[in-house]
Amino acid sequence: MGKITLYGVDASPPVRACKLTLAALGLPYDYVVVNLMGKENLSEAYLKKNPQHTVPMLEDDGACIWDSHAIICYLVSKYAKDDSLYPKDLLKRAVVDQRLHFESGVMFANALRSITAPIFMHGSKMVPKERIQAIIEVYDFLETFLKDHDYIAGDHLTIADFSVVSAVTSLPVFLEIDAAKYVKLTAWIKRLEKLPYYSENSVGVQQFFGLIKSLGVTVEA
Amino acid sequence: MGKITLYGFDASPPLRAVKLTLAALELPYDFVVVNLMEREHLSEAYLKKNPQHTVPMLEDDGACIWDSHAIICYLVSKYAKDDSLYPKDLLKRAVVDQRLHFESGVMFANALRSITAPLIIHGLKVVPKERIQAITEVYDFLENFLKDHDYIAGDHLTIADFSVVTTVSSLPAFVEIDAAKYVKLTAWIKRLEKLPYYSENSVGVQQFFGFIKKCNLTLEA
Image (cartoon, rainbow over all chains, first blue to last red; front, side, top):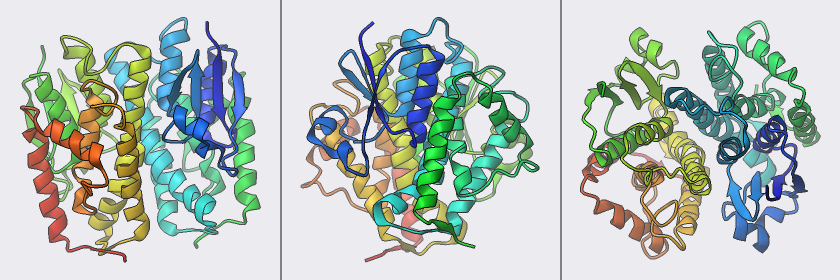
């Protein structure tokens, strides 16, 4: 097995999805912190490996892969002892893939990055009402997906749980998850918190919360 | 082979990605138009099959799958004679997966739906500068991805080309693709236009353009 290096920051939800997956697979790796505020992701060296200059990025024996979803699918396919985290059954896989793309579009792009990009890039201090609606939409859909199942893509833990939980546990800094309204969602998060390696997410969640709070961001009433 | 039914409407870019894939695979299917304006996607019957109430949705022998990316990965995995459209090689697949997630997040959610949703739901009349910037960001990244390759995920046609071209050929409804600035992007679109089944995209693009023109939008200066 060649050397695995993960590039990122703990506050980043997609980085934490990779960390959860690496921990679930019991894989050793080097972790290189990429200082985004210091524009380290825009260095010539980083751009050569990842022209989209995002985190996380994974190097496996010299090959560079980015986008957290591509990374975690790759890691399970290459290193897992069985396919439970990313089923080979085509219909089960289609559900996991849909959840992963839901995370990319509806969660990360539309609910999270749409808020954090103006904050980090333009010093925005106020979260517009429309962005809160986008978060509610996420909580509503996840509650529905969990209606008849214990995990986000069915009856067993998959990488979809890692991807979705890293983002959904970051959103409460803008809008709390009402435990009385989102019963299944709350129970599912508690279920994942019991994973022995869950600190791979929780540590970074606290960092993300701390970062947003320290910037004095408020939500439009 | 059981019966395949595709639900959607031609103006929708992700719907067209599925149509391109079905055509590339030469698979027969029934097409059921879902009228979003009539809220057909919110009917009890539709919600039972797809609680996220989006298009496209595919029924294959009774099993329901949604999200265009999950659908096209499924179709190739199940029906293709070889893996060229969705390589089994893990590193090649990781590139296709990254491009597909790029389409979900950076393209569809952040550049397209961020305009069309407010337009359709709230009657948006002026497209904010940030949304124009989001489209420019897409064109810039795609130009970069195509720097050294003829196709979006490497040297051969894959489902990533289908997914990306449907959205990028729709974005000129808001911001034209400057052929002098985006040389590679323009050449790649022309390359795909030569596919014998490209009308599966171009017909719907014209419908999308027609719809947007009728909305009489202006761009924030």
